[in-house]
Length: 228
Image (tube, rainbow, N blue to C red; front, side, top):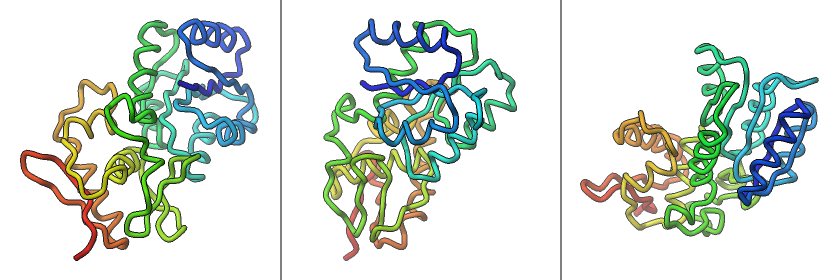
């Protein structure tokens, strides 16, 4: 697994890099908010660890720019700004998880591994969504994970994107709710399984112009179906 650590504190950056590398992970670092999106695009990480208090460009602005650019990599926010308002704002901008400083390193590692299941679909028993063929004019960009329809970027939330990429990996084949849940809500034990239905409902509307149908099969899960 490759991590992008966006952290401006040299001591924290070095400590986390050594800790993750000892656990066999590859770490790319960036300490400047103005360079973060460029480093994100060039390094193609599986998970991004993002500090909010960055020089030149705030971490939330970095995240907003990345999502606008179609970068759907799972993001874990690491910050001393741990108020409820900050957490809600970060999640609304497009973060997938939030861990306030100071934190336990074992908990951080567990959360990173959980988020990695979204990017590394093989861990959940899927083939790589980025390798999926074009379906109803939709394709997944192999570098960013963004989904395009007729070469136009589909505006999706991170959870909608995760669900669509999983279904595009095997169009026409049913995937169980439980397996999809692991990709869309990795490591979120407090979220109920039924939450996947809300994401599917919203995604169904997003992809309606493509002609693809997101079909719910009782007792089986979901599948993507081409128009008749």
